[in-house]
Amino acid sequence: MGKFGLQFKASLGNVTNVRPVGDDFRWYLKLKCGNCGEVSDKWQYITLLDSMPLKGGRGSASMVQKCKLCSRENSIDILRDTITPYNAEDSERYKTILQFECRGLEPVDFQPQAGFAASGAETSSQFPEINLQEKDWTDYDEKASESVGIYEVTHQFIKC
Image 1 (cartoon, rainbow, N blue to C red):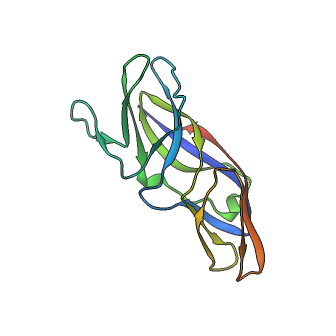
Image 2: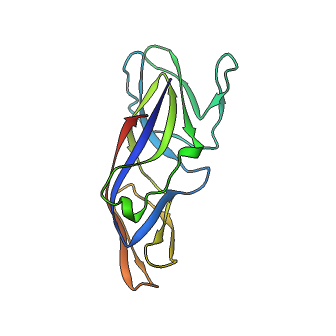
């Protein structure tokens, strides 16, 4: 069992408080089996709403799956209390925005998609529907009369 942190990095332009919205936010991951090293070829997503029982009544996890290659049962769970927004002062630095508890799995890739939100850095403007799949997002803050954006989105995983 191990904990892995998803570190997010981006260049923020006049926005702050970049965060996932809602318990149904989809974290798209590629996962590697800790037993045989097989990496999923398709993106898989997990949400805070997902809860599957672990074998032997040991609780639950966001996802429980059998490895296609070695048939080992593995699980990954989102640690709700570790979800943290990415703020203007974090711009251009890696920051852990969430942690996963993994049993037999290791996250190896992350694909940001729709479902992010942000706030104007100097205004009360809200940007509720941000899609980061293209690794860049731009909009216009009417209250500040300036363009806003999230650029050069990248990530890495760390062992916690």
